[in-house]
Length: 157
Image 1: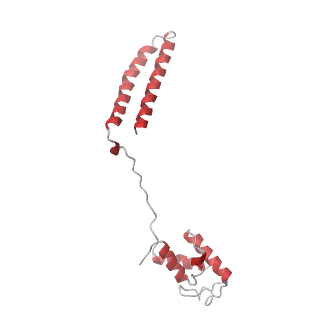
Image 2: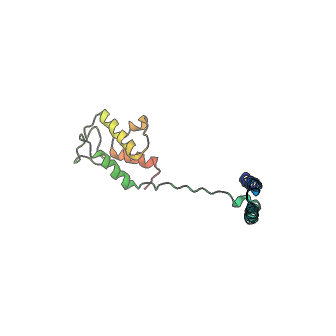
Image 3: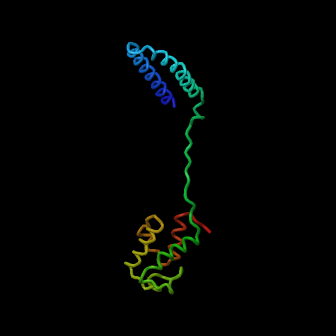
C-alpha cells in the first residue's frame, strides 16, 4: 500500500512540474495562463495531498483487500441418480425397460467391455471429472456409479 501511495504522490509531483514548465513556456505567449494555473494548483494540490495523507494515516489492516469465493451447491443424491439414468437412456444397446439403478451392465443389459468404457466416459463428461481406470473397473451398475459420484462430491444422505 505504501508503494501505491508513493506512486500516486510521485504522479502528482510529476504532473505539477509539467504544469509549471508549461506555464513558464506559455507566459511569453499569454500572460493569462499563469493565474489560472495558480488557481488550479491551489484547488487540486491540497486535495490530492489530503487524500495521500488520509492513506498514510489509515492503518494497514483497514486497507486490506478481501476476496470472497463461492462454490456451486453440491447436487443431491436424487439428482445424481436422475443424471446417471438420463445419460444411460439414449444408448441404443440399453433397453430402457430393463434399465434401473440395480441392473448390471454386462449381465442384465448385455453391454460388452467397450460399451462399459463408453458409459464411464459419458459419466466423466456429464459430471466433469475423470474416473481412474482402477475405479472404473468396479462400476458395473448405475447404483455403483451413483455411489462413486456421491463419494467423490462428499454427498451423504
